Picture 1 (cartoon, rainbow, N blue to C red):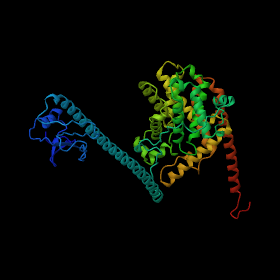
Picture 2: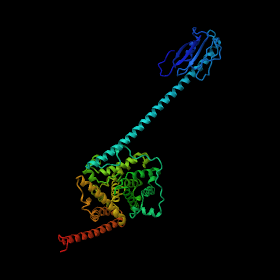
Picture 3: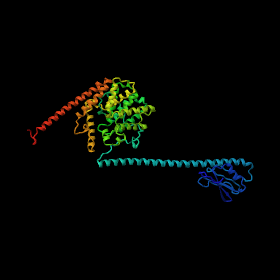
Picture 4: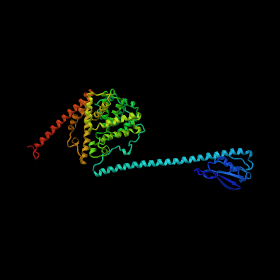
Length: 525
């Protein structure tokens, strides 16, 4: 008996002896025998003693008012007032001892149950309060962090505006911030378009006009390509996850004049067209098809509109991060797999881990191959293999896939003139924006990007003659059907721009002669 070291409230009994109350405290570990020993074995407890129970908060429960005050009594009340011991004399316990023991055992059991329930309630309440407080604090932290990010961005913008100096080429997707994309747990909102048979057939050809389609329609076309090639089935993709992934891709292309989501769609549609034109389904695996299409979709993610030369010369954050080695292409890869790492956007979630590692490495290899600084190296490697190409040779196939994505990335001149020429205007606009910035920051300016030196014909003729035609003619050795559909349009485009250049040269010469024949006063000689 006595007070316990337990953190739980002890059991308290008051003895009312002739109107004088005495308190007895029991540990929660007391057994019925302890209580019986107090009540029945002590000769010091008078006959007219009443026993009262106090609840865990210290409040007296009750005294039974129905028993005569002049009779010997032991009245024990639980909080629910369920059990009562009949009047007994301390010296007359013999035959009633068993009944008394049973009653006291039940009372002790009630003690235990009552106190433990209250203790449990208190503990649960306290824990809930603690958890609610933690949730509230964490929520406040998130809000504060977001506010700080906004303030930092605003401060950077203000500093860039005021100083007019060299500013880092910022990235929409900031890895220090963790995952930027908001999880899309709802069904994506872009509508499902039912593509006509005419559109389905047009999608397979380089003549497809990419300028007549809105973003939602392009998303639906990309979605159709994945279903049509059997990639959804092959990788066991959740169709809703595919939708969310495509939306995440679109959101992470910037509104640059050239390197934007329409360019992404253009490259992906050309890849889809080359797969059908070259019957690659018969020569490559479905995994290869998925690698080619996904690399095409992701190849320019979060392009800032300024090329690698600018990144390196300006010592931007991207150039520093990737040690001047294909900074943009490394960034595109990183953003691609940041998006895929989101569970709701992971189109490869149901692929075995080892297979996913191979897919990831292959996609990275293809995106890095789009760096034009590596053009000669990759094309020379393919030329060495093309005459004795072996589709069962893993290295041969890897090299072919690198050349295919390069072809698709710079394939605009394969398209009809009315589709291709607006892309030249877009590219020149992006080039001019960069060269203007380079001039303002005192950086070297490439002649083909300088608005004061370049024209549309001069920009395209060299590129078509020395980059596009040699590469597509090499692919033509492996796939002869490419000549009519792709190589011949390139030759026609080259001739078109050479004619334009001749016209421009003639006009320039005429203007020069006219200026030479003008006297200082402005009249002819």
